[in-house]
Length: 367
Ligand SMILES: [Fe+2]
Picture (cartoon, rainbow, N blue to C red):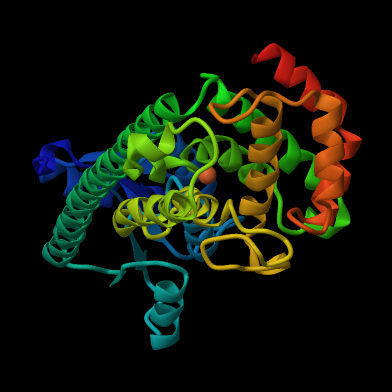
């Protein structure tokens, strides 16, 4: 806390003799006093340099003490300066009025200098304690904010690191599985394009926003993450799988979702992780209910998985696999058109066929 010698006080009184007396009493105690003769001068002086306290006369021409005090309190930079009224008015009503206008104390003229000084000292001390507390609370708030930021950043980094690991794992699964190495990159773009175009159609406009489109792009690589659990003998088998082998192959959808659910425990409110789980679990469901793992139909299949399914099949059709040759873009489009309302959401097939030229372009670029 600063010593009284450094504390400044504006003394306001329109009677020069009173002002002189007030100034001398305060100066004798080491206070820095700025004597002024009117409310206007007091406001100007306070604005120029805020004092630690103001002693304010009530009865003054033009702008009385009450009005001066109200103006001080209306100014955010000055409102915290304590104001003590000094006045010859001695009615209870005058005193109440003074407190109502924002005064912290009221000294009646003629005053004993000891009383005046005691009150000045009390309010200066209070003001200093208050300032100290404000400083501490600002410091505390800054510390808390810094901690929260650090923790949030840490969680985001952890989430990204976890997901990067998962994407790496799914690439590993793909590398074992695919004859083409760009399946993930292409399906990412197909999913984003299909989601973006779907967002323009009334049926999906309420569900799809830009965040959904972005999340589709980043979550789609996780669709086949469950394939890491499938033995090479089945995953890499040239030719058709036996019914038993196919049953094992089918487990990749649920196993992938389960893996992602372990991530979700740490990030329960993360939409991106939820989307990854839906995509992984339901990307082999069919519109007619004859897919796997749950045999869900139509709108019971999450939209993200319906989009993923179409993108995944288009890529599979147009790519060479260990068990098949590649179909042309045109043949693939015809097959997808035939599966409208059978394997795929009819609305999505319509959107796909409208922008098939763009899909073909991406296919050629990312061959
Ligand atoms: Fe799959």
